Each structure stands twice: as structure tokens, then as C-alpha cells.
Length: 215
Image (tube, rainbow, N blue to C red; front, side):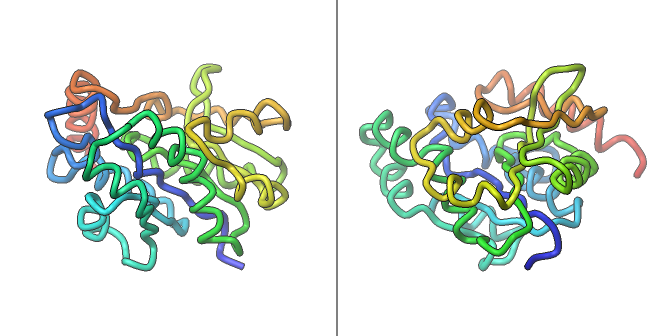
């Protein structure tokens, strides 16, 4: 068994809403990138992690984590290169497929925390709090003032269902079928992701404030 749940960082999305601005995860964020910031926060939790990504982002991910902690979705990589039939690609290789790949790659874990790579403001302490909730709950998730956010964590009891996920819906149906425990956190980052250029500018401002606070 691993030492605690494993964080699955979902970094295989196409980021198509950025279009000509480049992939959102490779965008600069302070002295790092969006992906780099997310991975830094994840590593700060002390929990093991695995990054699910495409060929175009492997080098960026490898700046922060070991190669053996990177899982490449080859079919998604080819789609990114060709930029063809993006809707079909998202349906075939969306969040569900990425979660299944991460769970399969770390099948001996004590559980799994799903963290989208475009959420760089999620604090390390938040990841630890949600992971701890898996000791007593089948599913746990971070929430701020009653609003559901990320990460979402799954107990080992759900392994057989997690490895069969596919498409872009992720684990949404599982959240509706099983009791999920909210973990109230003092972390606005659990609700903040980067989908558009405007989102990125907002996150850059918030990240600059975080970096300015003495550690």
C-alpha cells in the first residue's frame, strides 16, 4: 500500500477555450506555470501523486515530478496535435478516462483525490484535510461556505467503478449515487479554475497575493 491516498492531477484536457493563446496549463503564473503551480501545491501536501497528461505537456510536468509519476494518454496527444474532432475527443478521453487511468496506475493506493490541473490555488492543507476524511467516508470533497469544490476524494471501495469511467462526465454520477462528505475549508481556491484568458488574469492576481505573504 502507498502512504495515504494518491492525488490524481488531471492535465489531459485540450484547453480549447484558450484557442490561439496556447494551452492554459502552460501559461505563466508568477515564476512558474499554471500546471507547475498546481503540482507544487499538490507536492506540498506530502501525498503521493500521479499526473495524467498529453505529450505536449509532458516536459512541463517533468520539471516538477518524476517521469514515473506521469501517465501519458497517447490518443489524447494525437488529437491535440491534429486538433481534429475535438468534441469526439473530449467524449472519449475526458475527465472520466483520465480518472480511470490515474486509478489504474496507482491501483494499490489507500484512495484517490481528483484535482484538475487548472486549479493552482488549491492549498496543500486542503488536500490533506480531504484526504483525512477518507478514513471515515466513501467520498469526500472540499467545500467553501457550502459550495462544492475540488478536490474530490474516493475510497478504495470504489476502485472497480473508478477504473471503468470514461467520457467527459468524470465521476459525477458516482457523487449522486453514494453519500459524499463535505469538508468545509478556508480556501477560496477550491472554487477557482482557469477556463478562459479572463480567468487566468484573475488567478494571476490572486497568485501574486499568495506569493507576497511570508511563509
